[in-house]
Image 1 (cartoon, rainbow, N blue to C red):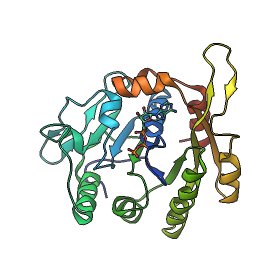
Image 2 (image 1 turned 90 degrees about the vertical axis):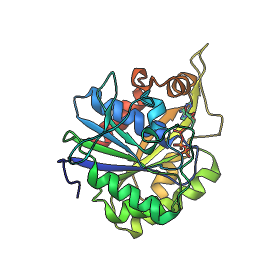
Image 3 (image 1 turned 180 degrees about the vertical axis):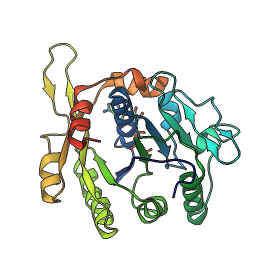
Image 4 (image 1 turned 60 degrees about the vertical axis):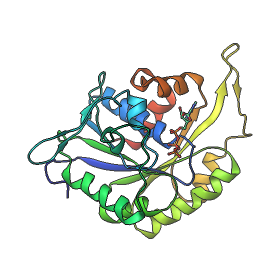
Length: 248
Ligand SMILES: Nc1ncnc2c1ncn2[C@@H]1O[C@H](COP(=O)(O)OP(=O)(O)OP(=O)(O)O)[C@@H](O)[C@H]1O
């Protein structure tokens, strides 16, 4: 159990493969829920490739060690609490070269030792795939649900099935599938373009018997906000529709 906090809902965000936008979706959902008045925490469980602190612009902040526990940092605009191994490194570019058991231990320590301010929702950004950390999280943390993120390429969908099957095997509830980079809206004429072909998320979700939560656009503005650490300023109706569906 989390020792020092009462946590409402614990939701893990997972993807079959890397680079599909799992961290972006985690951060966007956190922002949307915070805008709706929820107290939100984000645990960056992607220990070897953490990007959450950069997106929220909190890379320079340090979690405080209190007695007992570790205080997460807070984002400027929406007051989202964030904890990430990247906030604890001497230099953020330092790699975390740990083997599986150590990674699993670190996740368990984050889960137990962080003194959150009793968030309504805690989002866990998992590393891509079905390795040690997702296994630890699925086994050791009392999750209320898992959100699966994919992108519309066939290769991404192939591995989505693995992720979904892993969650099923560990008997955790799946809230649904988000298809990131689903389409592009032409900035000149507003036409929707689907660079990877038709929207496939709905079909894939149906074939896996999980809800389809919606698609998000491939948007240069989002990419810019992620890079500049200003994701809290980005709003999109697709994110809002997903938040409505998961109804946290
Ligand atoms: N919908 C989008 N539109 C534009 N850029 C995006 C979108 N989604 C993600 N990106 C960009 O793609 C990059 C990878 O995104 P992100 O870190 O969220 O992916 P990930 O699946 O979490 O990656 P990893 O495998 O490293 O965990 C980031 O630079 C992000 O800004």
